[in-house]
Structures are given as structure tokens and as C-alpha cells.
Image (cartoon, rainbow, N blue to C red):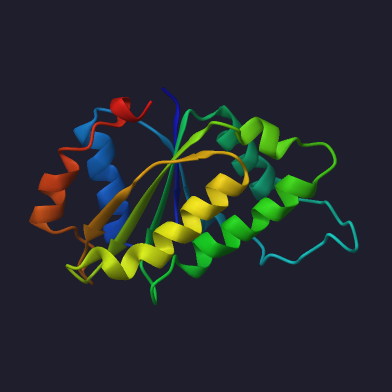
Length: 177
């Protein structure tokens, strides 16, 4: 199983990273990972009118990684009831993928499984609903398969809580396939 992680935390150490690392370790899995703070994607500019389809090397590399993955984990801290600006910018770039004349993004994403991981500081996961919705709706739009996902608790020190680590132990990625 080829797993790709797209992680959208703005800082390091990051409890979002720690959650994903724990999830992979619990499943004895390895993954290719893109940390969006390091990838430094350009800000999304809607090029549908001008037709400037130069994606640049980072977006090309991420697209190829998505196309080669069986499971794509989209991980983001919860910022003001949504995904981080880094994750939102990444999702906005899907517009390029959808409209680029040489890609058939929807056809190639059809059925790919996406697992959202949202990490917040509130024990009540209800505030994360908009973040999960942003990911699920984006994935459904490109005809991928959005999976239920995982909400974890993190701390400002960049670590996951013991309760969250215990819950991560129960997630079996193989069952998602």
C-alpha cells in the first residue's frame, strides 16, 4: 500500500506531525510525506481566465505523488474552525490540476481514498466539523473517496496527548483499503 501524507502545520515541532507519525508507527507503515511549511507552494492565483498552467516543480511533484498513492492522509491543525492556510492553499491548487489540459485529475483521482487528520486543542471535536467538511467536500468534488478521519488533541508544545495516542493505536489503515 502506497501512503502519501500531506501535512499542513505551520510550525515544528508539530502535534499534527506527531499524530501522523504515531498513526504510521501504529500500523508499521511508511509514507512519502510533504510538509507544506517546507514545500512552500506559491499562493494560489486563479489562472482559469489567463490560462497560465505552469504548475511549477513542487506542484508537479505533489500531483505525481498523489497519483501514485493508494491512501492520501491530509493532516492539518485546526485553525479557527478550519484547516490551516497551508492546507487550504494546497486544496486551492487542485483547481490547476482540474483545469490543466494535460491532466485528467478527476478521472485519475476517482476512487482514491483520502483520510483526514485534524488536530485541535478542544476536547470537543464538534469545532472541527468545518475542517473535516472542507477536506471531504474537496475530495468528493474530484471523485475521490473521503474517509471518516481522525480528530486528535494536541498541545502547544507540539505533542499529542496520551489519550489521542491511545486512540491512534485503534486505527488500522489496512482496513481503510
